[in-house]
Length: 436
Image (cartoon, rainbow, N blue to C red; front, side, top):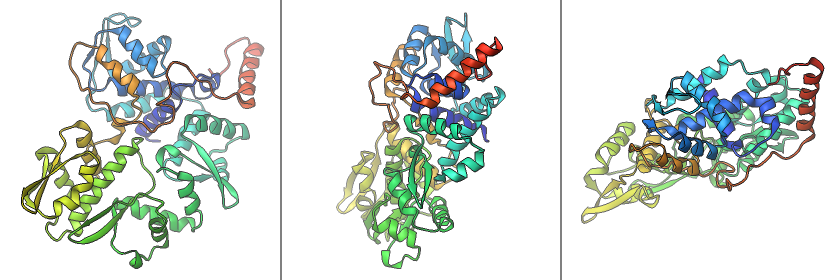
């Protein structure tokens, strides 16, 4: 599996479980949790050049579910992958320098570290399953067969995943299916239950079409030949932004899967894509020949409408309504859109550009796993100035819960049995069991 995917999925697991404390996590996915904690801390150190107050770092780490003992191991990992340089005593550094500026490399290096540490077969299966579920639902039968899962393994995976908010299941077509709410729109069960009414090959073909053309334009519902797209539209199951301007009303359809956990940002980015797609094909006043270049110039120049025109108010009004900028009437009946001078507005446009153009360098993973309570602690790490922008992430389960208590996973017979098995091996062998 690709190293970056391993790093990202480890962070997804840790973010879902950062408030939980249960021995089953160390027993079954301890290496993945540790790599996830390293990814989580690295995410919150992004943009900082030097950390001068180690006690402040401990306070920040505690907000991420990393205690002071674990912090030493996490810092060792980040030091090993050359994300940081520790100056002085490793147990209480005089300062810590942050080395990596292109953050995407961090996931790749952490994924490589995970592989080098040879996680056991269960952890490898766990990562593989979550990756599979990031693309589409998988039947229990196929999951068991694909990963040669024992009954206990499947129960533990679903027990951890459901409590972490990254695995869930539903019953349809007379069998049980697993999916990941993390990588789907709202109401995933409704979407998946709807798709179960169609041939799976046809569903995959339609989803492939929507993936290949984000913002797939629908000009007239009566002319749609794909029955799945027609029902998705008429049932209002998926977000399908509509733009009404000089070329009439056009809806723009997107696949029901997302690969960034910031669903508010993805919703706003889709509105940007829809507005640009309208200008690409339907506006009678302007024709965009290169939407990706157009969005890059919007970021650099800060406005749309070098030559103001009538369609701008109707076409880009949704961006204004999303708080991404303002529209100004330059001369009577002719408008210009000004992008808000904020990191969030620019990141939304970058994400929209990435949807349209595979060559874009913006990575939506930058917003992944950010916990606002921890991000606020950054101000105490250093006297140097750095970005105060807090990524707009609020959808992952447990992020808004009080941090005054640590939660435990609900008691289960599986967890107790696995812990007892490990202890029995320890007592019988006189040494450490191989699960640690």
